[in-house]
Length: 264
Length: 248
Ligand SMILES: Nc1ncnc2c1ncn2[C@@H]1O[C@H](COP(=O)(O)OP(=O)(O)OP(=O)(O)O)[C@@H](O)[C@H]1O
Ligand SMILES: [Mg+2]
Image (cartoon, rainbow over all chains, first blue to last red; front, side, top):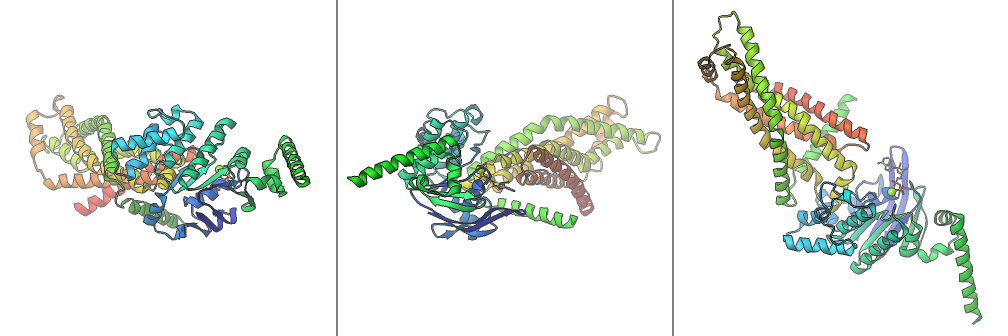
């Protein structure tokens, strides 16, 4: 579990995060949603400790991250995997070398063990056999999946994903969402995902916070999204008339069903 | 204002280098990276170093011969001057100024690119001590390799001096060899190595700093690379002077 306590972050005089407190639960896919520029990436980087907050604290299972010294921070980092918004694959290394890098750096595995772990992770993200390709030789969606493979290679307890499916077609996006979801459940890890993808919200939104102007404007889960009358949320999720129409239809249908249930 | 900015950068530089000195996560990975850098910096610079060294020696010989012309100083002094001026000053300084341009800009661009593309963040998240893994192998490699390059440069310079003076008849083979072998002070060799180690440290750590803290944008990356070279050059010349004062 990861807990944010009253986080503030100011760049020069631009207040990006203005008092965010939230719990991110173990074994769940925790979503941070919000419009482009809302501060999702900044919040995620605060949570992993890549940037330090102006004030407030981040707790990893009762350890206050920013009170730790460099060595202790690194010990926690060993348990963290992260997928960056732009994948951040090392472009002078092959896919295999990318995924193997943490193993090379931190484990005493033999070459064979490493290779089988790499192959397992590649298979896990449905990309078997691309070991020798360079990041520039594969598509953006594949890069994201390789990024996920690299993030999970050390079997992290905390997984951070910054927009895992931005820029992907809906089908591939769903595949990636499901992948992250199943990894989370299988390994019982704490996963935090940044997204502004409505499908993700509806598919894997176990625990959602909506960031708007630096504060949490709404929180809940995917079932509550439909019913909530929070205007900021509705404007965000059902942004187009088409989607609003869908929502109304869905609500109507739900009401009908409940009515029928009541009659019985 | 300027001074406080200097203190800010110097403090941050020291912090980066200090953090980098931590125990490597995995000795072998650092070793491998150091070897790769030695190859890049050492083998990769052989041609340019050889080329400039020939000319350094040649120019020194020809110009000194010109200055000696019509004086009572014996001709064999040309060999002596070529030897000493290259060993003490020209080989370490000019070689390292050139390497600051070649190796330094490369280091700044490489590390800066990794910063901008979030590779450094990605490594940090894995738990890698990035100021160790990305900076130290380069510093260590160049501290080992650059003194060798400088020694080679001094040697080639003397050959260059020979090639420019003996066949053209400025002095005879015997005189040149006599000159090269006269008034030899071992301490000068020491001085050459001290200089090259200090310069090697400067021309890797300063560009590494520039790259490591680069801001976003390709203009910034270009600027970091330029600053790295300019600053390294200035610091090399400054420390050249300090070493000269301290050791002579
Ligand atoms: N290093 C920085 N310096 C100054 N301002 C920053 C910095 N990083 C982010 N910001 C500002 O913080 C705000 C939020 O940025 P952020 O990248 O978190 O948005 P986001 O919600 O991730 O958007 P997107 O969905 O487009 O990725 C932006 O207005 C941005 O200008
Ligand atoms: Mg973002």
